Image (cartoon, rainbow, N blue to C red; front, side):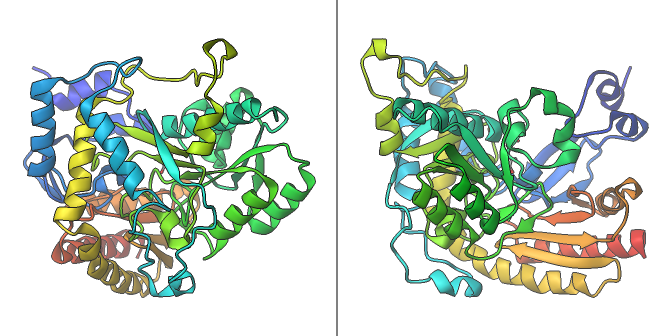
Length: 445
Ligand SMILES: *Cc1c(COP(=O)(O)O)cnc(C)c1O
């Protein structure tokens, strides 16, 4: 009989994976998880050092989330959101609106280096986020924001506002609209014939210049607040997000904040936007929304945007967009449970000492010869090694070795990512860093 590994190699096609390499290796097949740990079918234990691709928040197999999904499952697994509603989707929308940037009280900056904005309780942009549109993943959350922004300007009688501005090295997902916004050549260049044109800028200064010359034809500016993830965990200078928000206001453009990675505590506050006290016109959420359990996404927007779509049926102002699984009750139940855990377990307060520990641990990485830089944004750590040509697969080889030593993470080129579930213990975090340092030393010398 064929093993599971044989069947995988014969029938599967894995994402972002050179399958030639994959088929030459023995795959790790995950069977179960508990808290920040995972076990494979051979019974080997791993620490989940990238939170299952940046999604997991409170740990695997959390009884609270499991129970919420089970309870909902006993009622109904799915019903359409087109022309119908459901209980957890309604409750989750209310909850998301109550904690959104500008609405909740989780906005106090927690980092010493963000003291500049501390005590400033007035958001740069006074519009509140009041409306929730559900979809399935980060890419669709961004697509929704794009289409809403474009159509908003049509309804407002400014159809010339149809250009989108995105940043160099941006990553917003893998569907065609999201790829159009993307600025990572390795991922995005091949698809160019399919993409729409985007104005690309590298910093606030270029954005200012572009805005001045744009003559009111920019629909929206899209940004990953505080940190660009897939670019290699690149930190924005403090205050850039605020500058971008000011520029949007000054020139009447909408602001789309892609918090697919940064949402739900990752940066130390519930949302990254809260650290610079800005409220975007669109807030895109996915990865951590369900605690990392189920595919569910949300695009939040303002009453200003929403009301532009109101009209007589025959005016065709409807937002013509939706997915089969929009507002899925199981996903919404999981998300409600995840948000309840934030309160019950005081997740954000208990995260702060771990953020300090991560800072100390990153210092230790800097002492290693192959390490050129260690970066941190809240509970996201990134260790850059090199410089090595990408063909050398330095990051991949380090992570492969770490896997043999019981730590799972995935590199971005020469960048080793450290972002375990927020629930990871201090001992586990130390072990993750010890193992990764050992792997860097043993693989790269
Ligand atoms: C992961 C990610 C996306 C895409 O989300 P998917 O769920 O993979 O479609 C979009 N934006 C950012 C910032 C991300 O990190």
